[in-house]
Length: 245
Image (cartoon, rainbow, N blue to C red):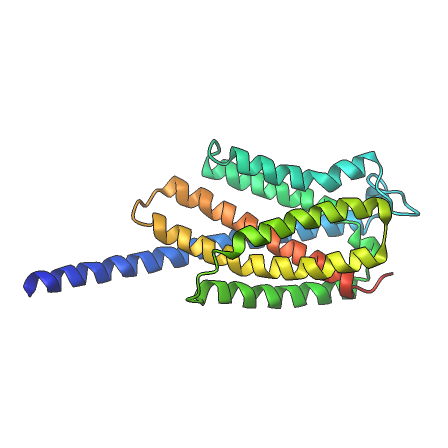
C-alpha cells in the first residue's frame, strides 16, 4: 500500500510537470507565431502602401507581377520545403531566424493586398480570421477526439489547391477562384485544429526525454504550421469578403 501511494504520488508529480511543460511549449509556439505574423504585417504594409516600393515587384497600373514579383510569389513555398529538409541540421536559434526570414518574405509576397483591398476590409477580415483561428485551435487543443486521421486528407487537399491556383493563374477564372477560396478556408480551418492537436501530442510523446534542442525546434516548426494555417485562411477569406479599392 505504501509503495502504491509513493508510485501514485510520483506519477502525479510527473503529470503535473508534463502539463506545465506543455503550457510553456504552447506559449512559445503561439508567441513565435505572433511575432512572425507581426513581422509579416509590417513588411506587407510598408511595401503595399508605397507605390514606389510595390512597383519593384508589380506593374503600377495592372499590379501584375514582374519577374522579381513571380520569384517573391513562389519564394515562401520553396522556403517551406527547404525548412522541412533542413530542420534536423539547424540549431533552435537557426530555425527561429529562418522562420522570421520566411515571415518577412511572406510579407513581401502578400504586400499587394494593400493596393487592392481597402484597409478597413483587411482589418475586418483579419479580425474574423483571428477569432476563427482561436476557436479552432482551442478546439484542437482540448478535444478528446483523435483527429490525426485528418492529416492525409487535408494535405492532399492542400496539394490540390496549389495545383488549382497555378492553373488559374493562366485561366484567370473568377468562378474557379471563388471555389478555390471556399475550399481553401475549409481545408485550413481543419488544418488549424489538426496541427494544434499534433503539436500537443508530439510534445507529450517526447516530454519524457526533455530534449531541449528538440523542444526548441519543435516549437518553431509548430509556429510555422499554425502561421501557415492562419495566413492562408486569412488570404482566402479576404478573396471572399474583402472590399476592393
